Structures are given as C-alpha cells and as structure tokens.
Image 1 (cartoon, rainbow, N blue to C red):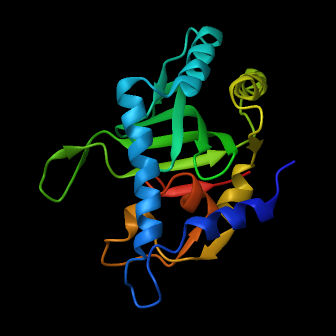
Image 2: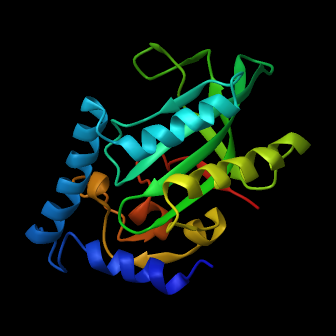
Image 3: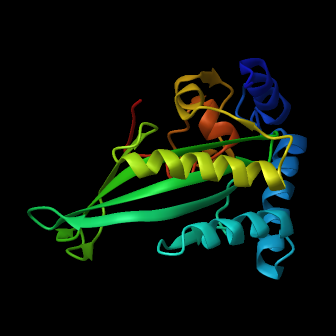
Length: 216
C-alpha cells in the first residue's frame, strides 16, 4: 500500500538543492546529478538489466505497439511509453494516446497512466519555422477503452517480477501533493524558478510537465 509519508520523506532526502538565499546546496545537487548520470550511462552501455528485462517482457506482451524507452532523459527515473493510437483532428491537430510507465530512482515506487498529447502540426513559431509546438497533454488513469484496463494489470504484474519491492503510487496523489522545496534540478537555472512543485515533479519527472492537465 502506498504511503504519503514515504513520498514526503523522499523529497526531503533530495531537496532543496538551493538554500533560502538561492545558493546551491552542493551535496544534494551532486547526489541528484550522480543518480541521473549513472542512469544515463547504464542506458548507453546496456547495464540497466532489470529495466531492460521489463521492457522486453512488455514488448512480448504488446507486439503490435511501439514501446519507447527514454533512457537519456535527464530525470531521476526510468521512463517509457507505449503508443496506443494516433489520429488527425481538424486544423492540423493530431492527438497521440500513450500509456506511460515511470519508476522513480529516488524511492522504491512507480506510477502508470494514460495521456493524450495534442500537437499542432501546422503551427509556426515566432521565427516563422514550422513546429509541432505548442503541445498540450491530458493525463488520466481511467482507460477510455476496455482493453486498456487489462493493459494496466499486465504492466503491474510484469513490474512486480523485476521490482518486487516497489510500490504503485496513483498519479493523482503524486501530482496533487505540492511541497515548497525550491526548484527541481532541471528548473534551477531558470530566471523564474518554481519554489513549489508537485511530488511527481520532484521524484519522477520535471522535464515534460509544462502544459499538462491532470485528471482522474
């Protein structure tokens, strides 16, 4: 059973990376950087064996779906998504539905959810260059199609094989629990630092969290 206390304790273990005067807390920044660097290096040389076994098992179960393992992301977690559907709407807008699985490296925990990502394929940025941005993403846990419920059950069973001690955390709990612990590692050098972030951003992913609506 998931525990809010475990999440809050984990955030306290690794944050803040800046003190009250905006000065880097060297030890915590170094710890986070080392964790992420070790993850990326393991991904490059194929040393992340347990996660790769999980990915391979997923691929054998979902042979008709493309699975992307984002091992190079500069976040303190293991992240992958399964492509479920892509369709074109009007005015050059496409919607891609994916199932996301993300395991934190800062505690023994993971989450999984579905997301619809809207992309404007005919959008031109301020330099008049064609771009897929801005994007807008809706994340949710209740499957829109019946077989997706079965998919979540299979994902959890396969994760338990490789990571039997890990706990599932609902994405709503992660995203709706905020803490005032200063910026995350990827956001600490921005001019407008966010001092209040969600537990999800601190422990799982602060990289692709802009323009995201989280619902049940």
